Length: 226
Image (cartoon, rainbow, N blue to C red):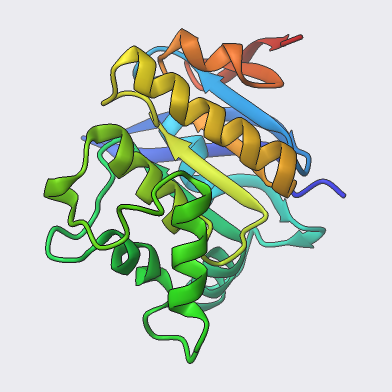
């Protein structure tokens, strides 16, 4: 089953009395356990595409299918519920709450759920990403790589089918970036989670199954990595 299938996506914005076409008929599909990078210069439409795939934005034209369900025209409430259930997000700047411990930050997406196992699940995820000894540390007590691992654990708390990562290595040094990419690769391989990483970092391409290039809102060449 294809976990996400975007067909002929077009996104237009009105700005300053003009129409900007950010995406120009994009086709993109993601399989379970597949790790894909999306690369391109600034302004090429990478973040716009990621936002549509993550149900944070809607296309002007085209069709988006998530887990065999057409979600193109869902209302805000249904989109929010589906996003929570099926999609995890990892951001370049982590967005951890500074007053919460690592385990509490991982729990945040489930704070309003009646889930007795929430704390145990958060602890298990942090242990799996190598932070079993940092459960009670606040963000200011963690390194950049450790913060990103907390963010990865948080993205998995709802057992998503898809993880979307926006510049996941952009704030990290080379060695830490490799550790984070190893973690993404393991999650894709062992948990069958589809991962999409928007990035400028060529290092990411050493870990992915294929690389999609966006240029001026259109798909360029696609590279399948060995």
